[in-house]
Image (cartoon, rainbow, N blue to C red; front, top):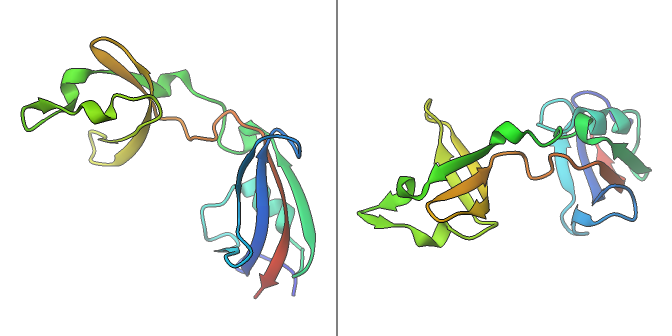
Length: 148
């Protein structure tokens, strides 16, 4: 059976940044393939396009430019907040003031978004709300395990 819209797919893959020799970002484990339904799950459209028509057992390589994956980094998504915004029960939550920490924030309409602390200043912190892979060219290599 070939992959088509609505197919349930299981596959193994390795994801690198900037080509096959780039940094390994993630990979599936042999006992746990990634599973999704073509066209129904939030996958990168260019990734899905590259898989169309493949069958179980077929190998694939897919290169996706940053613009077609998670986009370029948007400077407007680096937001500075005063440290006083992080007072909980009358005390400053010092645990979040380390670069790389993930901080959940609520938008004015109640949606929770995650920012990554990218800079700690004397009286403020800067959070990055870009997708973690924004600005990265992606390179997938893998194999289709099953199609149904």
